[in-house]
Image 1 (cartoon, helix red, strand yellow):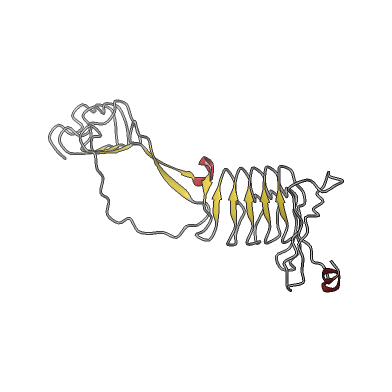
Image 2 (image 1 turned 180 degrees about the vertical axis):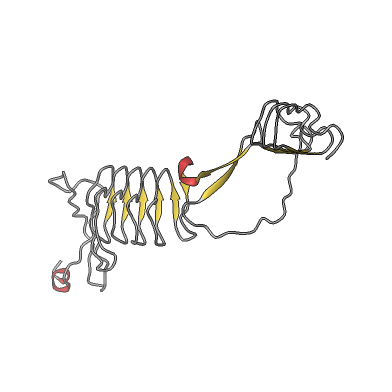
Length: 226
């Protein structure tokens, strides 16, 4: 196609070379496409466009916006050779299954199909599929979770939580601490007579540990007598 294109190719076949000295180094390779590139001796089944020692910027037409869909792929570039490749975003520890979810960590939210979940840490919310409004921070936090509206902070916190988004089971659990299976529950006040007391009792404690609180509702009559 151009002066000295494939000039030294002797036994190779199926090669295409466009440009001055394109494929000049290609001697025995097969099925290569070299455009403005001298090629590599003995190389086969490769496409080389431009010379990395000369061209520093790439403009490609026809690149259109796409909607994220599992499995999401990222385009990778070898900074040394310029080779292009792709990989699942999961494989390097960051994934977002949809614009309404956030996941950071290897296999975080890997099974998710719904929205409003946040998972940070290896395999956090790993088994979550149809439940929403969950937050997991820590490796394997809410690992097998299937219920909605849970918050777990700490390695393996709420590890085995199960539930059903349709019936509301396995929901509104809050756990802070590595391996914590259940947490302090909070009753939201609905009247001025509701008092809050620090009477938390967590698994493994026989008395209320300092600094931990559990919020409970106290009947109005009891509140007035205090």
